[in-house]
Image (tube, rainbow, N blue to C red; front, side, top):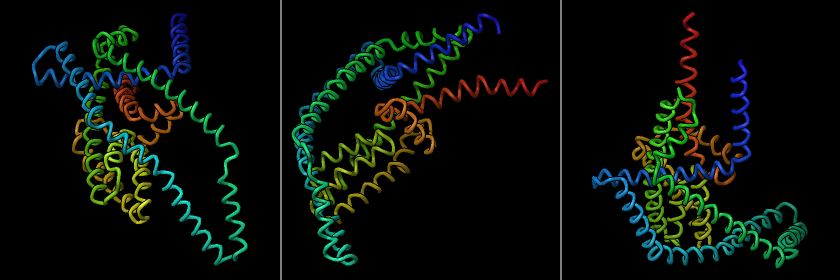
Length: 351
């Protein structure tokens, strides 16, 4: 290679190394891009329905989101907070009842196998393991840690929202900045790839919103029929956690099962069966019907993406694993396969 080509290779390697050290900043910027794409999708819908210009559509979209937020704060948040507080208060009781059932089962099993002496030793070991050495100090340290994490997370959230609003105001200008970073011969092609990534993200976000609403509605109806308390809190949690694929639905079963365990173990099993049914309906009926424009990902690739991006970026990587995988699938298909491997194959076929 020539001297200029070596300089280009070294500069590319240095840029990749810098991006690796700044990966937390990169994942926050990607979160801002995802939020901006959601807002741009809403703006596009308003433009098509009302036939107005983009500035007016953006203003109407922001006003509509603000009104929805105020309505949610006024009508939804107070009962949700109240029910969620009751839920948190009842979780220790549910855990204690589950521990009591497990202890009783172990006691009966050990009486049958080893006699009364082994049962007394087991009870002493169980009680010793449950005592805390310094409950006040550990609780204070945990409270300070939670407060620090919440403060840092709130600042990061505000920064992400601010950047997403800036991108939504002038999306074309920011896209052209990214296009200018590519060589001149590839800028037109990169612009097409970025547009396809935006379309894939828009279709994914619309499908996730509809499927999450359906999951929340089905969970609320099912829990009401089963007579489980805190229906609103559990239904909202099911809809919100449905955004996190595979892991989120599993986590959403913990809260209603804990509440149902206060009434009867059989009711907890009924709640588990309900959530399994709802998730199967969401996976095999709801999602295929509402995501007909979505970029399809294989389940194995989805799980691999969650593991990889969680290791690289932490909890935020798990939350953004699916949109990251959607964009990477578009980039691999368009850039690696069509622009690199397909011409390479054609050149190899022609001697």
